[in-house]
Length: 136
Image (cartoon, rainbow, N blue to C red; front, top):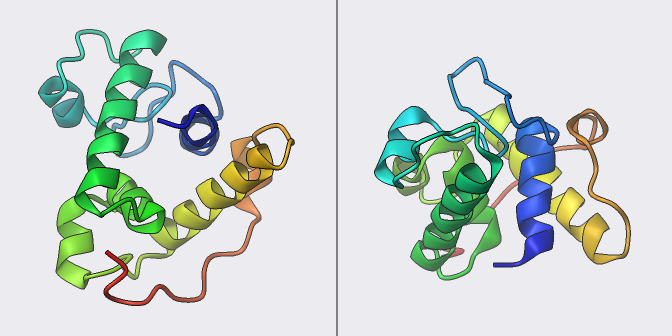
C-alpha cells in the first residue's frame, strides 16, 4: 500500500488524532467501526499500530474489490461497500462525495511533495461533481 495514501486517509479521517471517535462511533486514526475492527482482529482500536494495520488491510481489500479504482474504494471506505454496490458508483451522499474529494486532494498534494493536509484544511475543498457508473 502507498504510505501517502494511508497518510491522506488518516489526515481526513482523524486529523492524526489516535483517540478520535466519530459521531457514528468510528474510532482511532483510520476511524474503524467496532464491527470492522473486530472482523480485522483489532484488540485495541486506539493502538495506532493495530488501527493503521487494520485500516490499511481494509482499504487494500476495497481496492482489490474495485479493481484499483481509488474513487470507489474510498467511497466504500466511507459509506460501506453495500452502498457503492447499491448505487453502482459513489453514493449520492454529500459526506461521501466530500470525503472522496478530500482524500484524493490530500493524496495528490502529498504526491506532489507537499505535506498531507489536516482535516481542517481539507474540509473546505469542493466535492466532485459526478462519478460515472461502471468505473470498476
